[in-house]
Amino acid sequence: MSCDLTDPAIQEAYNEIISGAPTNWLILGYHDTRDKISLYSKGTGGLSELATKLTEEVLYGFVRIDDRYALLAYVSDQVSGLRRARALVHGKAVGALFKASNVQLNTTSPDELTEENVRARLGAAEGLPTPEATPAVSSTPEPVVAPVAAPRPVTPVSPAPVANVESTVIDTVVQPPEPSPTKVVSPRSGPLSPKTERQLEIEAAERKVREEMDRQRRAEAAKRQKETEEREAREQELLAQKQAFELERKRKEDADKVAREGMKKQLIEMERLRGLGLSGYITFQGAGSPFWKRRFYVMRGQVLAFFRDENDRAPVSQIGLSGQVAHIEDASLEVLIPNSFRVDLTNGDTHYFFSDTTKDKEMAIAGFMKCNESA
Image 1 (cartoon, helix red, strand yellow):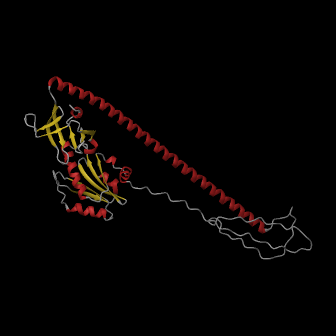
Image 2 (cartoon, rainbow, N blue to C red):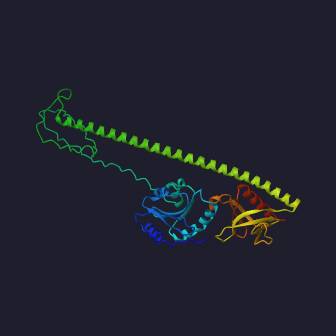
Image 3 (tube, one colour):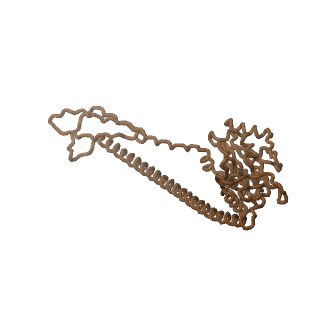
C-alpha cells in the first residue's frame, strides 16, 4: 500500500514554505488515482485560505503559522472505509517527506481548522499587550516679580502661581514683562492688570486639559474593564462546555462498560452450555504492520484465532489473550475509521480493529474482555 510522492512540484512548494517565502500553505491529493499523490494547490493566504480549498476526498496539507509548521490529514466523511485505511498509511509517508512539521492533525471537517485550534496544537505564544505611553509634561517656571519702590508702603497685587501646562495642548511660554512704572490700584476695586488676565487664561486652559485627560483615563479604564469581563465570561463558558463534555463522556463510558459486561456474561454462558465461541468478520492491523487485513475470527476459551474465511479449517494466525489485555479503547478519532478500537497488550504490542457495525464492535470488545480472564 505504498504511495508515489515523486511529483517535483511537491518538493518545490515545500521548500518555498520552509524558506520563509510568501507561499505558506499547500495541498496534496490523488487526482483520481489510487496511490500517486501530487500537488493540488498552494498559496499565501494561510490557514483560512487553505480551508476553503478542501474538497470531499482524502487530502494532505502543510501550513506555516508564524515560525512553526502543521501537517494536516483531511479525510471527508464521504470517503469509504478502505480509502480511510489507505490514507492512514500514506499519511505516514507524507509526514516523513515533510520533516519540518511540528505537529500532525487529523480532521474530517474544514470547520475544525481554525486559527485558534491549530495554534493551540502548535503551542504558539500569543503576543503581549504594548504598555501605554505616558504623555510628557513640560514645566513652566514661575516668573519672579521684583518689588517696586513707592513713596509710602503699599501692598502690591500678588500674581497667582503658574502651574504646569500640557506641552501637547499649550505651547506658549509666559515672558516676564519689561520693567515699567507700577500703577497702584486698590485691591478691592479697579480693573485687573493685563498680566493677571493672562494668568487666568492659562489656568482655564490647564483645567480644560486636566478634565480631558481625566475623561480619557476613565473611558480607557471602562474599556479595559469591559474587555476583562467579556474574556472571563468566554472562559467560564468554555469551562462549562468542557465539564459538560467530560460528564457526557464519563456517562457513555460507564454505560458502555455495563453493556459490555452483560455481553461478556452472555458469551461465557453460551460457551459453557453449547461449547460455541464468538465468531464473525473483522478487519485488523497487527502490531508494527501498516496493512489492514479482513479475516474471519473465532474467540474460544482464551484464544483469538484468525481464518481467511469461515470455510477455512486451519487458522492463519492466533493470539493467546489470557491475562494479556492491558487496555481497550475506541480509536475512531485516531484512525478516522468508524466502529474501530485499539487493544493494548501487556507485552507492549498494539493492535487496531474495526467492525462492520457498532453492534459487532461492542460484541468483539466483550469477547476480548472474556478471553482476557484466566481459565
